[in-house]
Length: 145
Image 1 (cartoon, rainbow, N blue to C red):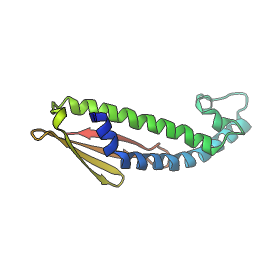
Image 2 (image 1 turned 135 degrees about the horizontal axis):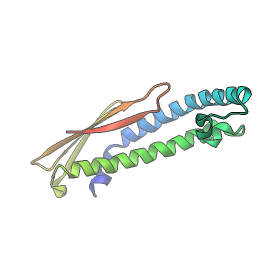
Image 3 (image 1 turned 180 degrees about the vertical axis):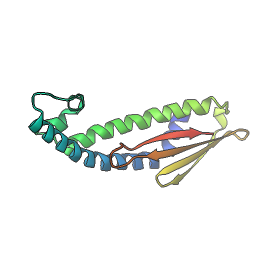
């Protein structure tokens, strides 16, 4: 098992929490965007803004559904999660640990995680900071010590 696979296995609770927050945010954001589209189409039909044109078709299209918008955002969140694990593995490898002797332990501090990676000589701690809100999409960063 390589480092990426180990990290994917150890961070499943983070993935689950991140997807759950993405679904919640997407549902609320869809409602806000539909109101924006309705107002814009009623009042500014001759001039569409950059924001209007950058919206996904499931928001602008009257037949679009919240489920389509949620699915779109889940795919983006999963890609972000996978990309962040690969970047984290690269950052850990730069620390010079012996990859054949790795021991990994993860603690889940709802919704953040803290992962300690050791080869018996060197220790690396990686932890997340998750943020988001009513308007801002859920996101997180890994910090490595």
